[in-house]
Image (cartoon, rainbow, N blue to C red; front, side, top):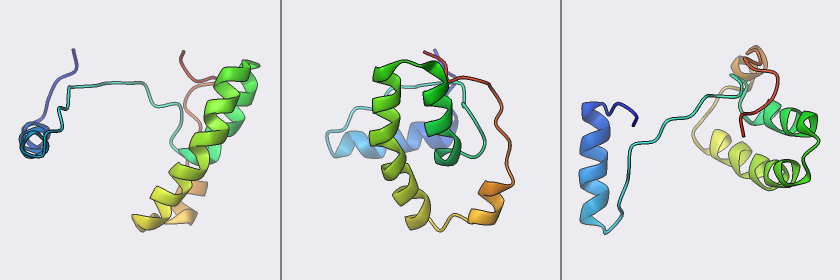
Length: 87
């Protein structure tokens, strides 16, 4: 199970007040450039299901990045940290 930081515990407590149950999660990041690389990484798998999920998810990630005020030049300067996304 993933280690939980104090702020994550507080966040989960607040979510629980709204009836939302959060559990600790951990996953290996596929890349630093996030949504810019996810599509390409998914294509490299050759797995239709993975590619389809990326096709659906990438626009949502792009929108979240923009709404949160992400800096595109920083994102474009990042590197891919693993050759293919974990399954």
